[in-house]
Image 1 (cartoon, rainbow, N blue to C red):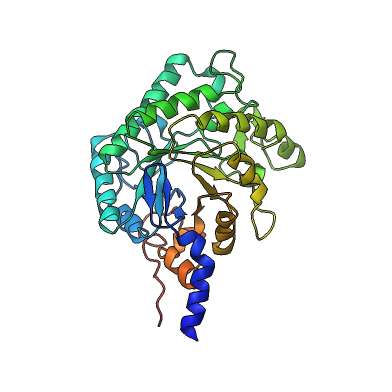
Image 2: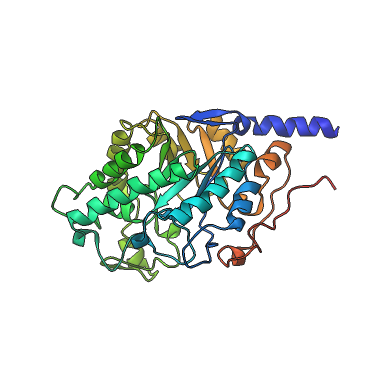
Length: 361
């Protein structure tokens, strides 16, 4: 009886367990670990440590790990204790991480990150500034390859610098980097892909971002104070309205012409137990390459969106925090554990590498 139950659970999870190719990335399953900032590089040089190696090694069963957003330069630093990929010490330390993940049979790409700067609006960045940013992403992509990563992912989601350029409410430039603001991202994509042979670069977008997604630190934005009242909610500049979605339609169509490994799409905030599949269908029609769906999925909804042909893989964030063995739990139908949010960014091993794997006992 137990064996029959496990077989049924395995069948229900089967879409997520099938192998897939994302560009030149060959995955044994479609369960992707989403990038998760954990603030564990608690050293002056922002070098990943043995804790990072243990953390990602524990999760090597994922079809693909997208490692946390990582600073592309010393000038890009926006939060404490987040690692970088711009120094030789960082490259060497990341090589220890990738070596362990590969030894355990996993695949891992690095997300390249540059935050927005509220003190310096998009319009105030000079063309030499932007050329320097493009070069930073290109160099970081090359460093990631030297560090042993299988590819990189460009963070153009949320309220980061690249998302600000894509945002017509914030991008008021009148030069070639002005609205609709695709040029900077496309030139960064070109610089990042130049460091790799084949399709090894992915991109993460969040066209449906809303005030409900805003982190606690994002309460004051360029020329748009946000205090949480109804008026400020209406003025929140990253709201994914119809005009914003149309801009992203055009962007995704342009990205489809680049040699990308995948599009990592963060959907709208789920309004119920099942994410809005139509939101992903919209961009599935515009992007012929592999698509990773993200935001609010569990095992059943993840299997369903793959079965529907609307995504090639599904990424999970919070579930991977407390469930390093998430793929096995999905396959066997075991319950998932809940993480302690109070330990997400505290540093140290607690709440980071001390989550147990499922045991029959």
